[in-house]
Image (cartoon, rainbow over all chains, first blue to last red):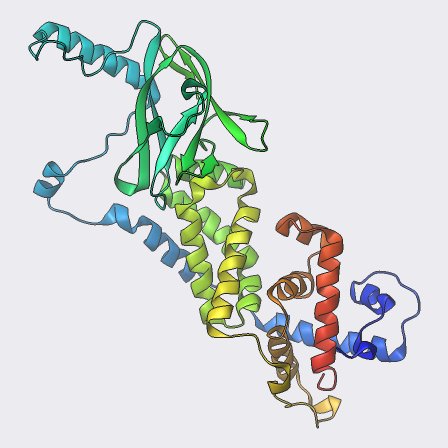
Amino acid sequence: MNDDRRFTAEAHTYLDGAQTGPVSEADRSDADRLRSAVEAYSARIAAPGRSLTDAVMERVERRGKSKQPVWRWVFEPQPIRLRPIWAPMMAALLLVLWLAVGNRGPEGTPPLVMAGADTVFVQFRLVAPEASAVSLVGSFSDWQSDQYTMGREDGGVWSLTLPLAIGEHQYQFVVDGQRWVPDPTAHAQVDDGFGGTNSVIVVGPRGVVRS
Amino acid sequence: MEASDGSVVREVLAGDAERYRVLVDRYRERFGRYAVALVGDPDLAEDAVQEAFVKAFHGLATCRDPDRFGSWFFRILTNQCHDARARVRPMEDVARLPLRARDRTDATVDRKELADLIEQGLAVLTPEQREAFVLKHVEGRTYEQIAALTGAGIDALKMRVHRARDTLRDVLGERL
């Protein structure tokens, strides 16, 4: 660039709209004309209208509105949404049923759902439709990322139910094996000491006290 | 009272996708003109904005601070706009800019032509210069506001704006 075509520092300050020292006539003239041209340009551009909002909403909601025959719904796997607070109750119910019916399976077959005396079942969920793998890491897994792989459900929801000891735990999700993200629905988040954030879950004898 | 970004993001993540409309309306208005100026074409800009909102929706769980959804979305939108412009309008060669106003007197250069010149001039800036110049002069934001939005330092932003002005003066000066 031709150096004498550069604005002086004073001219830049003038263009910033701040008080400045003397500005040469040539600089002031070009600065004013540049400003007028930008005003003319600014006046003719407009933000996209409401139709854009409708188009976005149609795209993000489309998956939830697809019509399917009832028979297909019956035979296809469907996600069951369960609040963490219900998990220990469901576990207890299943245990009672299992005991009532009796253990008729092969010897040594463990019960399908049973938490120990000091553990309760907790379901973790993360909405990440673009992820190809999500795992759960936390103080309960010694922060090993290969221990708890989450399963993908419809709608890009990843979930995992596991027994947790009563007490407080910190955790994060690992998306695609490299991106650590906290649980956006957790009520408490703490600094992980590495520039990131851990989510906190508190488990009591009757279920999740705080997540 | 207007719902905060953070509370709306949490509602969406909890399964109420319709609430995303609040964020789309809010940031369509707030960043829409910026997107048009960055892309240089209203129709292409609209596509880029739409794509950015859909991407943001699908990646919402990775927004580390829902209360700062605006800054997070701004970065997604800016990248989308830079990509859109690069795909269809490679950086203009200064020498090829039309000389429409060169031989005319100031009085005959009307506002439309002035606006056209800025549109053409934006095409010769680097993406970072264009971004900073548009935020400063088209959007009328302060350097502090731009720094908060982009995460860049104020000195670096001033440098980009100054270079953008110098470049525009250099390539358009005789035509302005």
